[in-house]
Length: 376
Ligand code: CP
Image 1: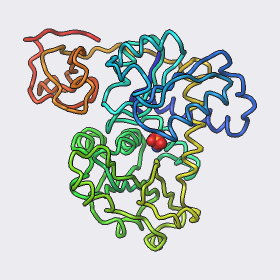
Image 2 (image 1 turned 90 degrees about the horizontal axis):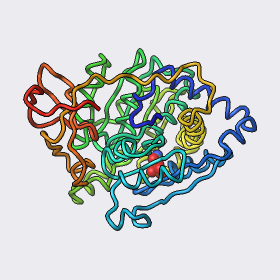
Image 3 (image 1 turned 30 degrees about the vertical axis):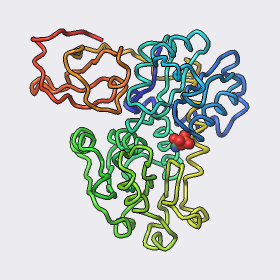
């Protein structure tokens, strides 16, 4: 059984294979009409969604399967206090695969550990959104013909934008990638992604607040919404919400083959007039999202012909349980009291540990000889 939490759970070869399958589905949809006959997808959405939920549902229907689930926490027993673990164990009795969106970071991971069927992270708080990343990679591949040698500008809310975090992480494995980070100072890309992803992989990047002067060098402009729902201070949100509005005028200095992307929903960060520009790709991203999710469902259910065998890697990492406490208030382990706090020793020499759910770094160094050590 295999789940998808983070884009790096898939190898580059597996992502290539998913893109190939999605392209084949686009060319030959009838070949896939019955591939998931008799299978059920559970969509467990604790947070609003239009594209992700409906594209998962459309994907499963177009594969001949069935769909069940809920679209808000209040219509499930979460409203009565049921944990994510118990929900996952329950749904494992009814379905073959789960797609879960949750406002807390790490919640789909908790479900994948508790349940007995594959779980797909359909967005967990400000953490990750790997299936949006797959849709983005399919779009880049179809629009540019490559995933290497690209200068990509990320603009808007780079702090809370989980699609940005996941796409940068995924692109870190390709060559010739340059990144331009365009945001207000308050919404800069988190330091752990700059250090652990960009710097660790020698990816050149610049940080700026200026969209217009950045546009001419870009092959891809990835616009994002300022994520109002993640702000604790409404005044700060109101001050920052209109930081960037892409208009046709601002595109005058852009390359003729620029791809303008946006995971959507947009609020007003791209003016409607830009939709008519042939460089606008965001509704193609929406369509591609359905096809790549079809490919992913087939893969995780073991129904696609794969040249790449799924090899379960033996995890030799050291984990510490209930010794360190996750201080991230948006982490599932901060909110569900019965969950163990488990940290992975990611840098043994420095004693640095990360929460296994949300990846936050522990605020204490850890000598693992001193504590209870468990292996996952
Ligand atoms: N891109 C995306 O995740 O959209 P939804 O929130 O509508 O699912």
